Image (tube, rainbow, N blue to C red):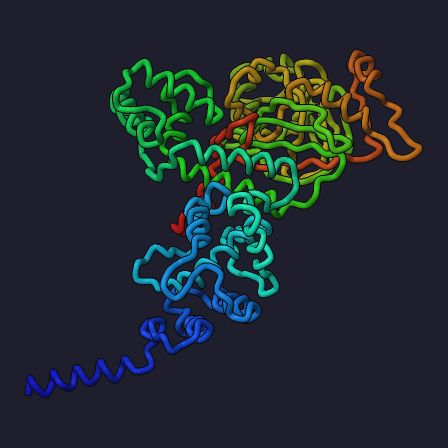
Length: 524
């Protein structure tokens, strides 16, 4: 009986295996088959599935080789051509060009036949060229783009390698945007000259100082910043350089932000750089005049006539009050603005302060209103039992005003704007995350003057010119200045920027890129 069961089991397994797509390579060694016949068999749909290609990729490679009359570009019957090794060398370091390795198929399996590797190399080459030019990430859906267009044929790109290297070919791809080219150049050279570790550390700020220091040393060693022969002083000096590269104060202290940067692997940092490059690939062309705010960089840029006119340090929202990403148009500059305090701030901050000090509202130039415009005497109010602010709170114009002496208005659903601040000392800090969401601008009068200088359309200029702004501010009155041509403002979130000949990996302040990086690592 047992013998019968065994025979039945063997027969059952054999029967079930019929029709199951198994990769059969024997035909690849058949000398009677032509090169074209072998490639055609590899390009069979069921065969390509065994190479882990999805439906889109299968259709794409079949189309490419069909249009090329089944010519081989990278392999012979027995081995890979020199061009294949040159290409694979660049594909192995795809992150140098801002393309995550998750985008490419591995061909390191020794069992793969050269013709199978030929197909995978063509697919990887097409993916690289397509991603470099058209992008790889869908930021709205927070996922990788799946499709390779059947209309996209990389063969004419491949022909260019008759005269230039794959390195140069990949470097040439992408938009002509100056910021993109500068970042791509610096990413390549940074990757070339630095150790790219993949180890993630989990150092806790709550650990004992000695343990934090020892774990930090391990991380810096893993990243190639130090060697195991360095003493504590040398480690501290390298830590300061590491802090500078991560947009932090170079104080040599292992604070919360420094530990966050140390825990992140270099490869993860490069993935964040790749996200920034990909945003440039899908960006629309900038207008001739615009304001650009990069939140993690804590900087504002003003461009006019395709030239950078101003750079300003800014203060952005705290992690509990993040500054939003947005697009709008600055339509008005206000000298000596009023500040209508948001209800949440009035309840959480101003009400407790008034309860503690009955002179607080008056001392800080706040007026309170019932309804639209009925002013209320704060001394007539019993503040003791209130849990929320029952009035509209408006701070009067002046140097004491939380918005400072100038404000830039643009429509948005977040009730944020760019403005001055009386707390100038905060601009001297490196990690400037202090506001309730608005963007406080250093030297905002200079920005206003630049905007007014370029505020014109054919046959019409703004009557308020840059040289009259000082006299307007000296009057200390609330004066709105409407712009003739509203200026686009883009508030973006790009954590990696290029400066001079280096990259600065600013912290993912609001953890907005953590989820995206996980996708690029294949963890989500």
